[in-house]
Image (cartoon, rainbow, N blue to C red; front, side):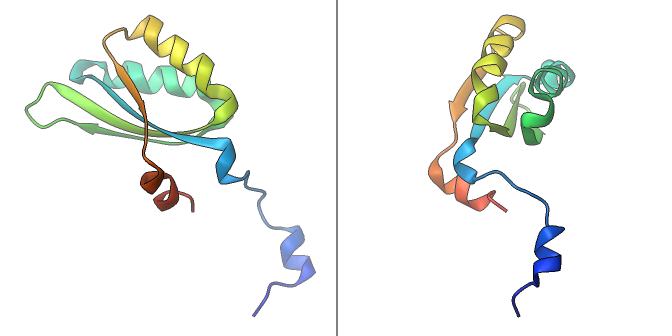
Length: 101
């Protein structure tokens, strides 16, 4: 059954998936709190989600970030400045489709 017009007017607006970027980050395991702080402070409302996983025994952590495209350059610059050993990669299309909802 299709939602009524009344239900549609109360629906939450979600920007198109094209306006968001999936980013894979890697940093030193001791930088987890700093990484989270930078992403949330700089990305603010543009951050859709951030998942940080500790690298078991590897001394590194991995993070998956979904952020609005307009905030990417500023966040990338800030991460490079404050966490110079971190790496930044755009996630493959497969991950973008999986996390679209």
